[in-house]
Image 1 (tube, rainbow, N blue to C red):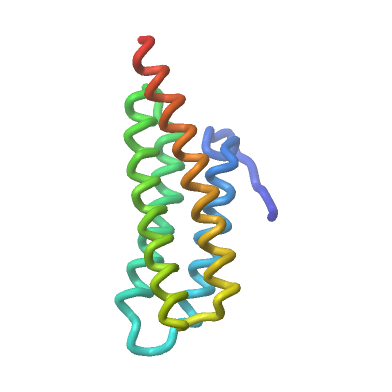
Image 2 (cartoon, one colour; image 1 turned 60 degrees about the vertical axis):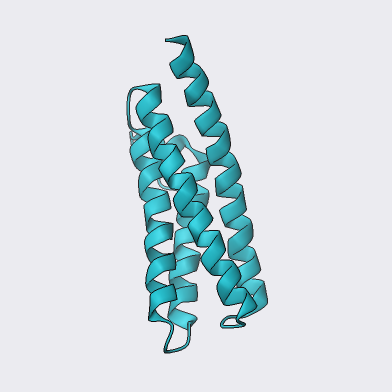
Length: 127
């Protein structure tokens, strides 16, 4: 995984980099989905992109409450990625190994987001 860095806070978060990897993988998976599944393709692409964008937005917010709110949204979107990936896996629309790998990434991002949410909820409570 190649990492580029800027002065923005999201570049320091592993959750962002794993979400980027997830998004790229989902873009590749979407290209492999057979015709007739445009709804799944669009939904998983939007959910992956929203996961990454909300992590970015949350990381670059100032107030802990604002950060936590964006991370909560990102976690929901990430869960949506996992659900669609499970569906395409069960329907055997893509190789099982491809779906499994992306679901593992989604679970990693979800776990990281849970930690970020907890950290920023605690910080908000102490202010």
